[in-house]
Length: 202
Image (tube, rainbow, N blue to C red; front, side, top):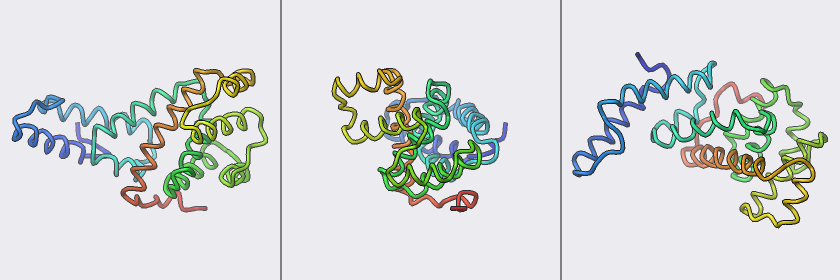
């Protein structure tokens, strides 16, 4: 099967295997299976992004292990308790905290164009305000608290979130999304990843 999105994955895998072999160390994967690994990852990306692969994923393809980890995290969290809109707002908070122009543009575009989130809500949230919807405001507030305290919420604060409908498992899920987008934002910032044309609509 010919890789559709990121044929460079296999190239990086082969080069990494050669370095392991030359250093007389054991690789973490069987190089003979590299085609199957690359094709499987490519197929998963095609399912996630049927309209085309965003530039940030091409950036992260330069380390296929990191990319594979990010894809796995995205797939698992996509089936979690948080809605897709809630996950996007969590991700937007991470992008704002990391000052990542790429992720902010991509997330605002996806949220408004695909999920139907009003631009006014996104602008308000990016500006430090809270959504008017109670549940969304709760998720954004919790995300900011987790980012601010590096997860060190007090027992009373955790109890308040739980009483409001955001229990420990959902807080962990927010942390998972924070982790997912910390990987993406830091990678985009490191590479100064170019914003995709589709995302440059303000």
